[in-house]
Length: 298
Image: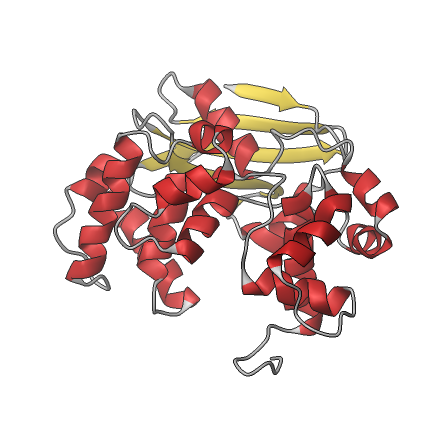
């Protein structure tokens, strides 16, 4: 089953994949990425092939969705922030020259999200206190050994395990007993609707963060990551040190701004405050370097 989608506002799939995604390409078609995931509702898993042949057309092709193709398409679009009307995104850069320069440099980059808040939560639990490389390897093995395998033109693609599979997990190489127990909590939260993307987006940010922090192992930092990179809120500013540091450097402030000062400065980014913050994060990581403890950069 296929769907053709017209992006609302600037969008470049290759640019998004280069900066965020790292998705596998479909063999023989370097311009086609494949996003495999358990479909929210948890009845099935899908692999969605995404192609962009022109700035005005994105084509999606669903495999393995078992009658839930519309859900799979919606989830893939959300992961690419394509479900958001971004036609007014360039206007933020017109109001704020610093953001405008970054928009031009990064081709009006939109945030790329996890395929669901559920996968975001699992990612943070698995990756706690280990390297990013180790976390990616564990998640890839879990997908291959426990998740659904979806055939796309003779190529197998593996989706992360659905919540019921995660809930049944007793042990897994690379995960200690505490992480297994916390992953069970993530699976339960997904099954009871706590991690539903649409629901989290509909809540006031403070309430959503409070509910996410009730999941065992999810503190303030992980809760913000699940809300921002999983649910994909568009017009919020999180209270975190990285955003404040990026603002300080980009706006040449004499000291780290408070949250209140950051919010005042970010008023001109509305209604895309999170998109602007993510753009600042990308710039900081790629061109400036992250701060070390003690204030030095690396």
